Length: 378
Image 1: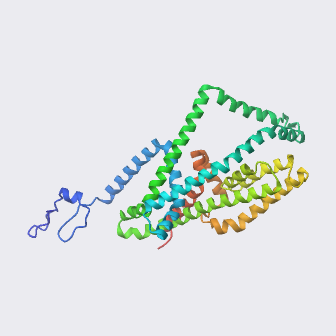
Image 2: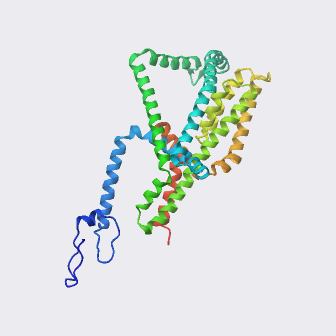
Image 3: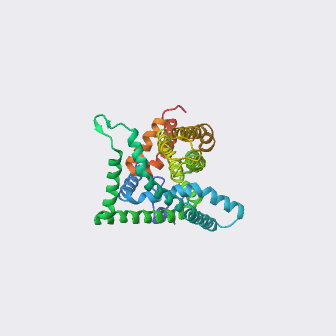
């Protein structure tokens, strides 16, 4: 039995047993549980945080797959919950069904889309010399006193790729990188499966560790973060699909070559604010200027039509798609968004660029919460 304070010795200190330390159940009546002081709790929390930071820094090369797993699980968790709610099947069955559908879609893409992309790449390799020649004919011979030869740039890129394939050490490094990428992809899928199986119980379990007087406040904060992350990730994924499909339809109607590649690139470049759409529109305009089209227009007319199409799509995106699909839930200034994306690219490559905007949105929520707690009067 846990020791208690004796009636005839009112000043006696409570005795602490191993059961008091091991048993987390609330004490009643005369039972007294030992608790750390606030300074001890802060010291332990800082120590655990420091050790966790060291572990994460040491394992930084494999964090990427888990980040992608979290993104995947976050996007598809509502679908799993919907299947469970409608069909009343166990969550594991719903997750298996989702993975089955995903594998089927990937197989369909591999069967119908990959051959089209391969054909367009082969066509690009055949047409590229003629396009380069035409571009060189209209460009000035020199820019700022330096000779402007597009073919030299193409040759240097080709020489680098050839060197990778012919140099044994570079080839081994390239294959090792490809194998690592495949391994990371498999790890991301497995981790995403576990996260989807855990579902809301994972969040509820973490919230259950908090004191009762703080739980409601943290739940509101988590709800705000969930609104930002959910709205941004699902909205951007929808935006990529909409812009890719719309661009492919438009380019196919006009008759611009390489429509599949250009459309996919356009969709993903929408993740980059301001400059992304400009970068996405530049290659189709150039290609339209120097290739044939379905309507027999001169190159400059086709280029103007393509530029007009991208402008219209951009306006529809800004005034129709983004407010209704993305909802501007992140609400960060475009300059801050631009800095966040390129900072993420510099720090963590493509993964950092993808997660930069939602991280900026979460930071906005947390800073707003900290401001309300520390500066604003109660």
